[in-house]
Length: 102
Image 1: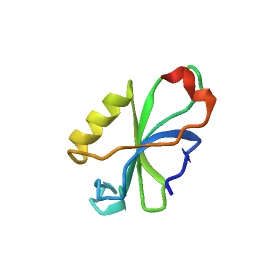
Image 2: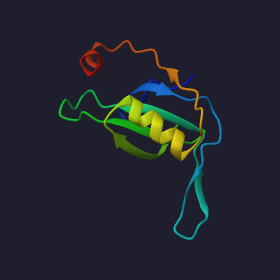
Image 3: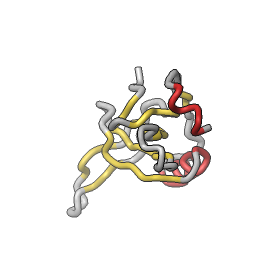
Image 4: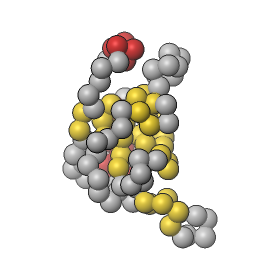
């Protein structure tokens, strides 16, 4: 089961396991593979209105991330950067702290 939090951020959407690319060392060697993508927020920081795309390895460790201004922007950039027709799965949100973000 996909985690509900990654790096203290709440998961809003995630993908099934697939090959979404890799992060490389400066010499070109693969450092880690992206096996999952997730869209997350940090509700504990009310001044942070960004949504984040997290690239995770097989152990759900975040190996890369970047901010976007909306969920839709996260999905569009992920599709153009990693794979078209990404299947996003909505996370089961039970935390009332997130309600003001939507």
